[in-house]
Length: 278
Length: 354
Ligand code: HEM
Ligand code: FES
Image (spheres, chains in turn yellow, cyan):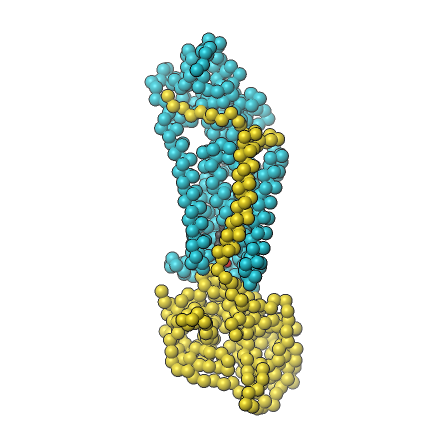
C-alpha cells in the first residue's frame, strides 16, 4: 500500500512569530547564499560586459560656437579653426536638435526669428551668415557634432558677411565605389548613447534617423579603425526616410564617394544602392 | 483570511521577508552601478540602470519560478513560498523600471508616440535575426503587471481560485517571452557567452527542478491504493501509518484525499486547499484545525469548512476503522458537509510498535 505521508516533524506557519528551528536555520543559510549572489552576480555580469565606447556627450555643458551654417549636404556648422597656406581650415559639425531630431528644425526656427531686415534666408542662403550658436558638443573618434539648444536661446548673434568672406567648401569626387558597413544615427553613435549601434539600439537609430539626424555609414577596416561616411541621395538630398529598413544591420552601399570639407559622403539611391549583407 | 481584506496583513515573518527583498534589490543594484563606475566608467548612467534592472528582474524571475518546485522537493523552502507574491510584485516593479527607462531612452523625444514607436520602429516581424525584441519584453511586462495587480487575496476570491491559478500560469508565458527578448536583443549585442551561458544554465536548472518535483507527484499518483473496495470503502493504511496531527494523502479515483489523525479521531477531506490549491495533506492540525502548509489557511476536518468567520469549504469523505486499518470511501460529500470522524478506540492501536 502506498500513500503519501509527510515525515518532517516541523511545520512552518507563515503568520507565526518564528519559524521552527531547523527550518529557520535552513532559511538563514539560503538567505546567506542569496546575499552572496546579490554581490557576485552583478560583479560577474559587469566584468563580462563588453567595453563601452569613449564617445562623449557633454551633457549639461553649453558652449557657443561661431561659424557658417550650411544645409548641404546635411545641416552643419562650418567652423574655421585656422589657416594653412592662406586657406581656411574648416571643421564641419553636423547640427542636431534636442531629442531624436536633426538640426534642421532649429535652423528653421532661427530663420523665422532673424531680424526681418536681413534678406530672406532660406536653405543654402543661410550659408552667407556668420552665426554664433549655443549648444552641446558630441564627439568621438575625430568627429564632432553640435546639439543646438532649442528655442530663443540658440542664436547668440547673426552677422551678414560680405560676398567672398566665406571659406569655400572643398568638394572632391572620389569616384564610384561600394562600401560595406553599418548605418548608424550620428547623434547616438558619436556620444549620446552606448551602445549607439547594433541590434539592441536599432529601433532607437530608426527613430533618430526618421527625425532627421544625419545617417552615417560606419566602415571598419582590417585594423579595426573606422571611417565615417554621411549617407545622402544622388543630389545630396536627405534620404533618411528611405533608408530606415537598412539601419543597424550590415549593409553594402554603392554610390559616388565625395570628400566634403573634412567629411566623406556617399551619394546613393537607397532603392538600388543599399543591400543588406548576411 | 476571507472576511475582510487589508492591503497586506503584516506579521513578523512577512516584515523580515520584505526587508530581505528590499535589501537584496538595493545591494544588487548598488553593486551593479558601483562595479560599472569602476570597470566601465565610460558607460552612460541610463544604460547601466537599464541593464542593472533588467539583469536583476531576470534573476528574480528565476528565483520565483524555482521556489514552487523547491518547496515540493524540500519543505524547508516553504518560508520562501509563503510570501512569494511579494517577491513577484517586487520583480514586476524592477522590470517596470527597466521597461519604462528603455522606452524613455529608445523611443521618447522623437517623431512618433513612444508606445507606437515601440512596435513600429523596427518592422522586421518576419525575420528571426532582426525580429523586434522590445515588444516581446513589453508583452512580458504586461503579463507581469496583471499578475502583480491581481496578486492580492481579494482577487483570488473574486476571480475564483481556478481562474486565478490559470492567470498565474501565464508567468511561464512571460518567462518564455523574456527569454526571447534577451536572445533576440541583448544576446545579439554580446557575442560573449557570459549572457547566454548563465541564462541557458538557469533555464536548464528550472526545467530539471520542475521535472524532479513533477516526478514526485506522478510517482505518488501511480502508487495509490488499488485494493478491492469494500462497500465502496477502500483500505488505505494502518492507523499507525498516520502520525498524530498529520495526514496521509491518497489518490482515489480522480480525487486526492487527505486523511488526518488528530485527537483520537480520523477525518478525510479534500487535499486541495481552497486558497491556491495547496496540498492540505502535507499540513498539520493546529488548535483542532487542519492548517495548509503553503499560506496557513485553516479548516475544521470534521466539518469540511474553515472555522467561523471564514467561509472556505472542502469536500469531505466517510472514514471507517476496521481493526487497525483505516478505510475511506472515495465518494465525496459536497463541500462543507460535516461528517462524523472515525473514533480510534484503545484496542484499535497495537500496544507495541516496532
Ligand atoms: C516595455 C518593456 C521592455 C522594453 C521596452 C525593454 C527593452 C529592452 C532593451 C532596449 C534592451 C537592450 C538594452 C541594452 O542593450 O542596453 C533590453 C534588455 C534586456 N531586457 Fe528588456 N525590455 C522590456 C521588458 C523586459 C522585461 C519584462 C524583462 C524581464 C524581466 C526584461 C529583461 C531584459 C534583460 C534580461 C535584458 C538584457 C540585459 C542586458 O542589456 O544585458 N525586459 N530590454
Ligand atoms: S494554498 Fe494558500 S493556504 Fe493553502
